[in-house]
Image (cartoon, rainbow, N blue to C red; front, side):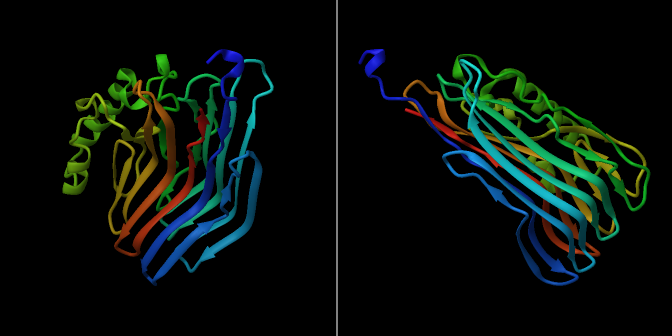
Length: 283
């Protein structure tokens, strides 16, 4: 088939953002739905949601929150389809233990006009003045460039040697943590470089946390006595729908800024500030 008669290239957008999801068991049972949620139409466009003052008992409170998702074909020549996913929480307070002035999750993708694997950036993603039980603000070492440059020849990120090396370094840091719970030891004992065809990798945009607080940190994970664990900026990269050349036609990027696993004064798991995108081009 000559180029003039080739099927026209198209793109289906997908992006969603939410400020709160999860389920509580203590001090009361409550299954939380997606709060301040935005979801993009496959044809693109722009969707936003905003909410003032959220209170879930005395467990989770924030002053305001908003999300927005957008997708369009870039107006610049030779540029592809751009998608942005943003979730923002301001004045966060979880049981008077975990507080932050501002939490921002932001994912931007650029799907090419030719090929399938997008360029991905996290510019704008941050946690401002995170405190634990009234501590001084913690210093969070972000690595927004953990994915690195878009792999050559439309290859997937999950088999890129640079990305895998950076993730392996995070895993090693966690494994060296003192008194690491068995569940986490097993979870991070699997070296991501061990499989050349790996389709999914989980890591974090946070390499480490510095500062004094009631507890300890190990990589991107905070251990807080009488509260539980807090995972910061958890990132999951997945590839699927491979063509006959081994190129993934779909890339899914998921980000959760704070995942609180509570098991003492409160019980349950909540995710705060999340985004996901996996648009797909064709044919």
